Image 1: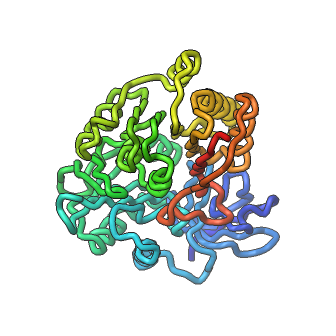
Image 2 (image 1 turned 45 degrees about the vertical axis):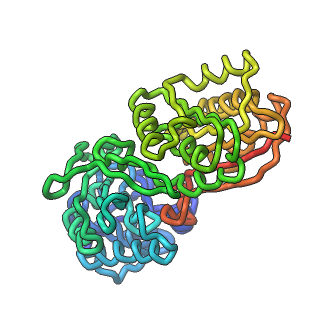
Length: 397
């Protein structure tokens, strides 16, 4: 019989669907357990809650896997959840590169699996995996085995070089799970060829969550002068050129990102209209507005400014300032494409921050598109952490 953990849930967060039990909620335990074991969770006022992985070293003491106390959490349970996650993607129409498992949203907390299809070798794919909590780490080999059975990938690469693992008492690590294999490939995204290296790229190797938002700029890109700020590997910039922009400039602070974005432009034969340079975006926009440089479309897709709740106040100022500077560099009738991938920057706060920037810039905005994450990154209601991406296309009128 599993050990029992007795908790309190004064804010009804757990009863409302959230799978995390924090250490401050734990009142006592019964029975013996080891870190990473499955335990029963009992609310002292309302009774049984569910089953989850426990880790005494983590502030998130238990990560719930199921609310059904009668379920056996074993190899079959893990394999079934992975198959169910892939079945959801297939139902949503995914056959190519996509996120196969999105942690809590797929009932597999702290597990991320991304699939990248090789555009130059039809039918072949590589997988990138993260196991970010101790309980999921213990099932890593079973997870990999099930993924091999589902996809027969060329290889699976572990991207556990993430600082959050240390909070779980886990070391950072990256490398192939199984035999070594080439980690570089070209994927197809909305008709564009994109170079990906799952060993060295950001996070799992490449951001798959902006695919739909990239495509959403098609109506505003035609014959436009476009400035893509924080371009990274060129996502929005390349799409703008692909959709008919006459001139695109992508900016990023990283020389490596600029080199890769330039390579992607060459891959797609659009380097004559799509160029990149290393620059501090804040400084670039300030100088541009002083010199009355204007664009038809400006894209802001920065890295997460608010990586913690304590950083939110400064992050809000940062988002307001960068949007203010961009708005000063737009023609009347021009478009601002502005994004935030900070979970702590809630959608309502993000909208308010942009509205404040527009007021300070003396601009009126008309919303023409609002996007979030695609269906392979599903948002689980009751778990706000799973809703992190916001994207607005706003016209200056």
